[in-house]
Image (tube, rainbow, N blue to C red; front, top):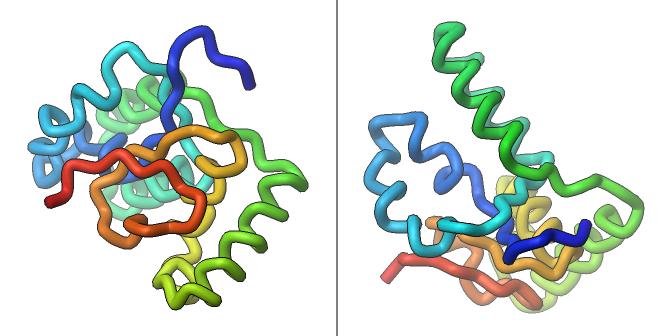
Length: 142
């Protein structure tokens, strides 16, 4: 995965912000982190976006817009190295007492591990990613 411009992994809430009114304020807040960059999505993020759309019973037009946006991004490949990164990161988080080691943050763990595996910054608006070992976090959280 060699991008021709700077790439960033984008967390679900930041990537999906343009698709929901509730998260819409994040669009402007994170524009400087995403503009002119290759957006990379963890497989977990794509699954979360599609789950949310199905659960909320989005119409065909809204789902098509989501898929168009996903199609413009690159999905980080899930390979054995990523699976190892998830395991290593969870151990590091458990030893550090970090919340990403907890079962209810498994999805976030995969997203963080994807950024670490591909040595890319993670753009996220979620405090659980703060102080994650080995993660380059780009956030606008105070």
